[in-house]
Length: 334
Image (tube, rainbow, N blue to C red):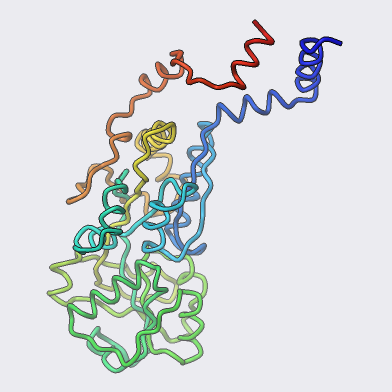
């Protein structure tokens, strides 16, 4: 049997077996990854909301959990599977402002913001005898995993306020809440958008914990004032004044097909914000996509994206690069 007949028979068998349709569908679907936060964090829920939105437009978005913003900004820079991430604005500012570290400069050059999303309130959960930030002096305080945004924010606010805990324990939210209940720490800090699932479901009135206000003028000159309304959590009876930090959707500065897919995701968010507000986490209700992000560049693939441009690109026939496999196929099927 001649080679050409063998190839034709093989291709026919693949078609009948259903392999080629699957390959075609693979090619048409966009694939992206987004790194978020703890699985019970608002950040992770926001990622899941985006997954639900873009799936309807044939984009597969893999949502990855993480330790938080510090891990996320490096993951987006370093790992090809994490095309986008949710990062606190103070973590990005830290990367940009620390001079003399060439690695941070590389990260700052390659990370672009897609959209500002929502405010993440600084929650300090403490025992009954702790009523103010100053009361954390000489106390044991959990400040988040070292790769979390909470860790950075905690260190900054304690530095600004001159608060000196006896021990700053670098553990994540799950361990911190368990330690607080066990009495091995006196308070814990978490930076996340209210309501935070873990605090809503895993803290009870019987625990005797409450949120500690942050009203320090120095901190409020750096972080915007915010308020967690009474009843945000089942155990929270009164409004709590605090401060917040913006959560940003960021992306690696791709110059390939991911550029258009990320541009399309951003366009879908903008066009379907009402859907997200209706179907997603309550934080979507406060999202203002036009809010400025000072000191950082918006991803050009987001600014320049139009549905018409992507359709034109799909319909065009770009010049193919040399490929011996493709050449052999064309030789068999002239």
